[in-house]
Image (cartoon, rainbow over all chains, first blue to last red; front, side):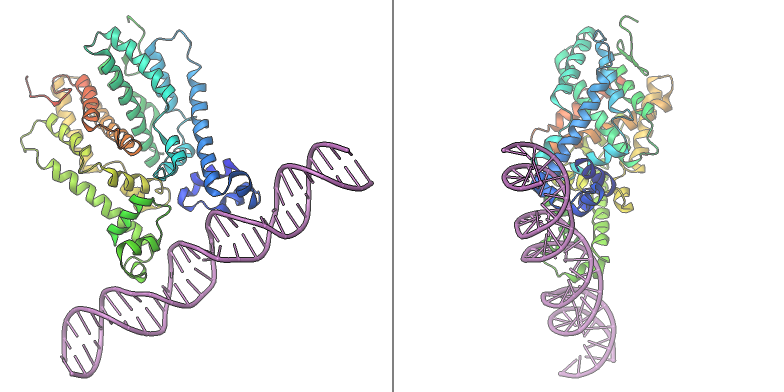
Length: 201
Length: 201
DNA sequence: TTGTAAAATGGACGATCGTCCATTTAAATT
DNA sequence: AATTTAAATGGACGATCGTCCATTTTACAA
């Protein structure tokens, strides 16, 4: 039922998704929505929550593949590559993401979902960037790390928007390279155009 | 009428915007929509077009203030500061932007509007970055300029998303500084944290 | 002032919306 | 097997949707 809802939002958009189209796709009966979700709004909230869970679940599954002793720049690379990977960023997810985001205005649940990346991810990146900034000997490591985190997330956000508009022309490796170009300029000892650089290389 | 439509999308979202709410806000009669715009879809298309025109009109008005002999890095700075200025990026415009984008799926007119920044702007930035890249003596100036253009636009896109979610917490000067931090890392002779740097400084 | 064309109106229309509940079907318990 | 409890159904309902057009109002020419 929830998946059918997400399918509808992905296929025909939030505005055109009605109770009828949802139950039609789900093959269930009309009353279920009111019974289990307290109406359409409740179902939408549940769907949003599910989509959010799915996103983070998949993302952290990919991030867990990084070995625990990885350099911080490897963790950053993993975040970037994961967030732009086919698993996370595809026609289906991006349409859901932007479909809901447009309606985030009044609905608290949607707003929560659509909040740019979660605290855990942001914390992970900030920590990694702090280590990198300190090792790089910049003037203000904390500020630099904060900016790098914020900037990288904004970068990813922008790449998602790119993908939404031009899913065919979008080039994942190019998107990664662009981000790494900026990061390698900021931290030349830790990144190059291909991603993370081994320490001391 | 068109402005009333945009107001509605900004205030209650695309999904909840109906013909009734539009004519109510516009103070005009029901039949006007079908008469002048061939129905609701036509009105929406016109509204999207208008919003797009307004965006570029305001943006280029700001960009025209840059003196013709400005250094390329000043032009880039102008693009960034303009795109993040109150005139261009505010609660009203960002809600319209994302409200329509979520529905861009099938509607060609919306898709066109929502297409990340126009060719003219992109060309202007690419030219400026090419000059900068050549002056910086990087290995592959064209590729670097392309990446810098793409990257900066993605940056701006990400900042817009930030603003949509947290309009109160959003800090324009911080957003600018973050972008300039990355640009100054990429082109240290041309940018610093405050923006464009005078040539040869 | 009168006549004609254009612009604007607002109500009627069928379609579809989301909600709700009387009923049926399935599962669990005695 | 009989009974109770829960889950699921799908049609009815009023509200609202977008479209369309008979009518009125306005603007302009004669």
